[in-house]
Amino acid sequence: MKIIAVLALLFIAVSGEDLEWESCNPDNWGEGNIALSPYPLPVVSGTSLDVKALFDLHKDLDGDVDVEIKLVKKGIVSIPIPCIESPSGLHLGACSYKLEEIVTKYKNFLCPDYFPEGQDCAFPLKAGEYGGKISGIILPEIPPSIANFAKGTIHGTLSVSRNG
Image (cartoon, rainbow, N blue to C red; front, top):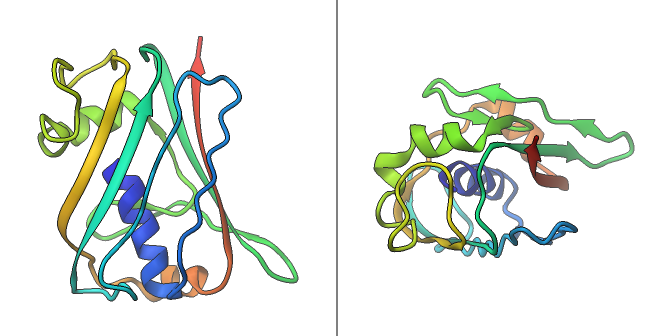
């Protein structure tokens, strides 16, 4: 959740544009209701902001789950935005993750505040509402290599798929 919110905010910060979100989930095992409403706008590096991010999981989720973010800068020629590791170790751009690894890596941040009551901070994930208000996010300085990609229109796709 934090990765998704931070990634979206970085692109809002450098583009000055509002983020549009469309949910498309044919399997209906979960639906992402993510409301990214940063305040203040425009988002500027080094300032504090709040974000509300929610994810409703309609069924229990276990096993090998991949989260893939694809980003393409639209223009006369569409350019895929690669996965770039920031100096702080955060991966930005079109990256792939294992959901269980995200939960494990960020469990001190995620639990218990952003997990439903009764849910252990581990897999499997039970059906319920995950997320909430994230306050006081300070965005780091954005490297020029990322800032140049983020200016303009960016089409993003977030895919969650179960393997096996």
